Length: 152
Image (cartoon, rainbow, N blue to C red; front, top):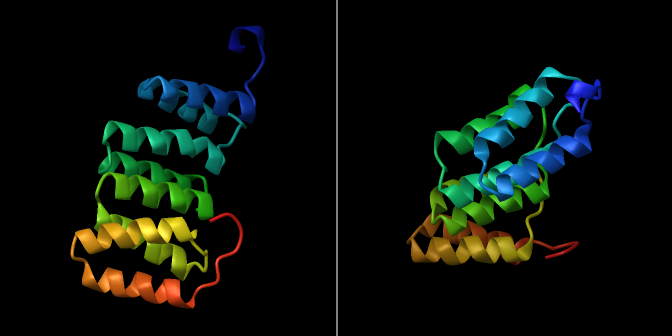
């Protein structure tokens, strides 16, 4: 496209990132993201979903995941939505990182974003397994007092 003077749009970039991530070609996916940052095609939350999922699949939960989240928030001024929080909590629970998952859950609640019931149950079950008593009490209290709307 570039050789023909055509700049990729958001949809094209998102598709390329998704395909590269699906085939675990992280350097190529990050290259597309970097290209987006240099041109007028700015990433959106959905641009980051495949990259976040790839972090979980490849077990890159430390600085790599934190860097992606930081880029979303600071570089692109994107606020996490319910779907992104859900993805993060489920991924962290799958990696058995209950403390970080609970931190994300608390942040979500503080921002008045209501988690899905299934997300709460997943985090609650892991918190029970990990003997995180304060988290267990907090999640149980939230479950007792919350009204869940939308898809759970």
